[in-house]
Length: 500
Image: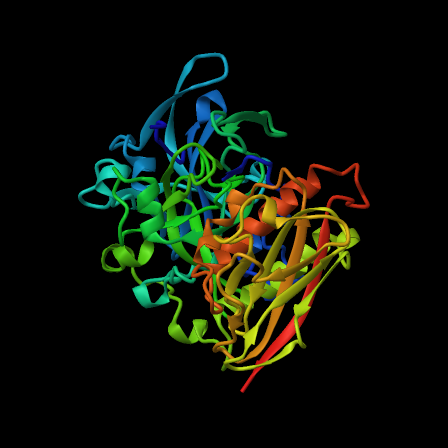
């Protein structure tokens, strides 16, 4: 088995770099709903306004004019910073820690907290906070075996900037399934095995960090059972949250431990659900990141650091008929259309007999392809639930390859049944058809094609499915910038409605 590494955020494909500059401590958070729509995979620069309370832990060797940034954290009120226990496990009682500088000399410095910056060149005296004490969760030994990878750091002076809202109850944690899009941010390494780089501030200070600027990425939450299957010998239970893409490419990494994993309320304002804890490598296929679940430790947090800001059920309440899934699926469709703008219209897709379907009626889906390649067909119902119609367990490799001018019926010959039955929910849904190149990694689609039946049966983690689909399309499209006409791609989208 691969060696385990605590997260001391990264992407196999580098993150987008944030705009630099100092954010004053009094600046308020910005909810994403107040800004242009963010892409669901990649493309988002990290702005400190989106990350209230974002903190860093550093060892400062002042006489040598050097500093090591070793972990992330989040300010949860004016006096306390939340981080991972393994980040402070080897800090001495006097708050000292040694590190090796670029010349191989051993430097000894003092642990400090840095708040209110998104560019480490912009750190000023007012951003640096001395530490009163550290409180580690009792029972912590090693994150993969003991769990309890959570700690608090008390500041000697008050921090007056925005602080993180927390999920302090299991009822406000995102439920997986169906899963949600979460985000994680930090100043960690952009590549596994390269935990720190050397930077020099304008005043001559030499510092070591994974990244000079704040980075972020979007990840789907992963069911605990799926995560436990990936890490069978490790502690994965109700105390953890897992997040990551099936094919990898986006992840937290070395230097990001202790940092925040956030979800979003109905106004797209962030609230913290997890603390970066550990993983295997960074951004590998099915190498999900493991995060300490904050709500599991709510009583301990309140006893040691209260009062705290908590997200409430009212913050998460959706409009009538709205679901977590259909909030997200429209974003996925729009990003696919943006990625494949030159390929749109090369496919036609619909329901035989018309796209208004009576509840209980048996239907057949029809696709006409204007391009050759591998065909993927996805149904998104009125609740935002996702079903992969093609490929499926009834089709072999050749069955989902199409030629120019091909007409495909789903279900087709050899399926063993003649149609799908339209079932609840009633309302408007969408069909998405893609023709993808031969090297498109179909295994990225989570194996949900095995779940196809005679009825409309939805994938139980639509966010995970769609983020993996969009990620793989984005990865291939961005890697082929020399093909602006997207000759190997096709995209067709059609609306339908199930009526009573």
